[in-house]
Image (cartoon, rainbow, N blue to C red; front, side, top):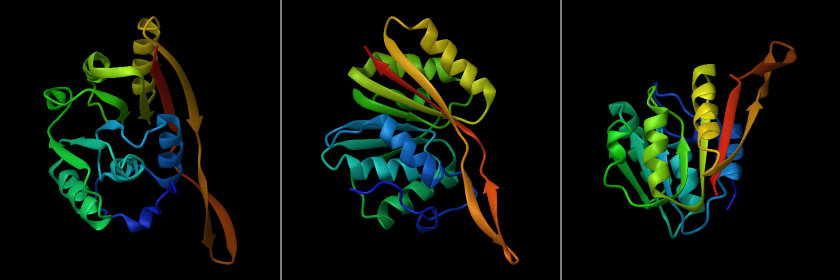
Length: 191
């Protein structure tokens, strides 16, 4: 299975989408097994959910999203890619996580300032050696995430990387590097 579906292949709207290069790094950090149960919190367009579902054909992905447009896009993208092992969960985390099964991997792309509550619920259901991968664009989310894992260092090992991607863009007769927003990828593993 190849990682990194091209961005332009996804059905898109005005909902933010995790870009191809960031999806690849996120999925490598997630180490999704073929039978994994995955939560994608703040799933947006479902780009990570789709790729995770393809990595876990014998598993299942729960795409949690509160934005009605995002919910529609996840559904459209699942159909577009022929992915059937996805359940779209309509609602905001942490409340929308209630009733979901134990998980192997959590992908967090949106937390609505409730990151600690979300991590508490995920942590209570996370399988031994399970992984949590958080993509953050704001320093507040980075700080909240690192504070949480530092405070719970008895239960998790963690690491963080900052990624800056630039894409070549043709501008008249020139090729220029156009920078995407920097992203922090924080990965935690249950001890």
